[in-house]
Length: 338
Ligand code: NAD
Ligand code: UD1
Image (tube, rainbow, N blue to C red; front, side):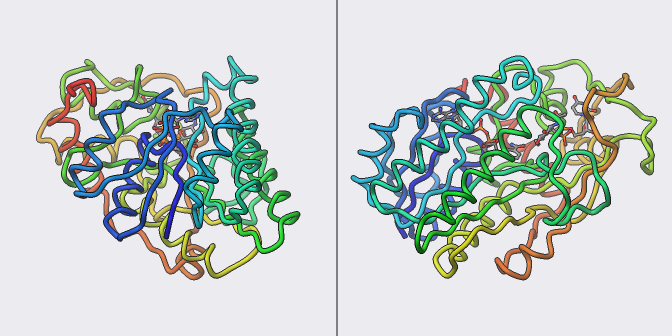
């Protein structure tokens, strides 16, 4: 298959491209390096021994995107490009709506011009908001509680409307739970630009000595040890879910949402112990107050993806921690090491 990947230099995009190239697909990637490094492209090619086409382009540049889509003539697009920091989204809502929603409209406009009718979209479990029941299934009401979550929800709606207005189109909405881990080679991984917002990269930076201690945001939740519980999903499992979604889009018309998680929850302190085991290092932490907007527990019911995509997560918590540690310890400054 010929696959156009937006946001291909990012954390999840780069892991997905590796799996696509390994399976013999042809890839054209687009990224403006807003939150990534060109070094990742060399690493992808070195890991797979394959080449990919790349354009440093902003997805909001509709004229450039139209030329790229028409020139590559993809069978399908995987749309990762976007902004993802919750706090920043509250401070700069217009930038978030512009990139995440305006960018999606621009991409679909370019796809229309080239007659490309299949898209797999990076959505998030954050579209559900505060749980009405758990685990979340895809019919759970969507009441996102922050700007970032609303951009994901609105992008889902834009894709749904585009699909129903386009003969023969298919839009697959993948609602990721908490992506963690790295490629087992340790050559690619998550490389946050500033202080990490998410738990796993923060823990990894504490283990490698870049930060002194983890702040645990609350230990008074109604969970087994009082700290927040999440459904962590290995990034390689997540990458493979995209390939299953491409197969689904090749066989179906319509819009379908899928939860991409394991169905298994771990608390912050579970993650600290597992990472300490994997790295052989102590992870100093201090208990602090709750982070505003956090929920106690987030857990996926992944049965729809298991049944309809024929996909299932196979990597366990130890794989998630060991691969993160392999990446972090061999690239203590991420791609900054070149
Ligand atoms: P990332 O920041 O590593 O990757 C996103 C990529 O998009 C980056 O390389 C960035 O440079 C690029 N980009 C941003 N704006 C762009 C623009 N205007 N034009 C072209 N490229 C642009 O993030 P990620 O973790 O790989 O996430 C990928 C997608 O998955 C995002 O849409 C994100 O919202 C979604 N998602 C991520 C998570 C997570 O925890 N990582 C969870 C749920 C959903
Ligand atoms: C966060 C985002 C969510 C996004 C998801 C992507 C918020 C409020 N939510 O969710 O929109 O889709 O990332 O993966 O930012 N924790 C600590 N100390 C830290 C960091 C986190 O204790 O330094 C705790 C959190 O309170 C939470 C758990 O670790 O209980 C996981 O946090 P995180 O990795 O940020 O993910 P989410 O909160 O699920």
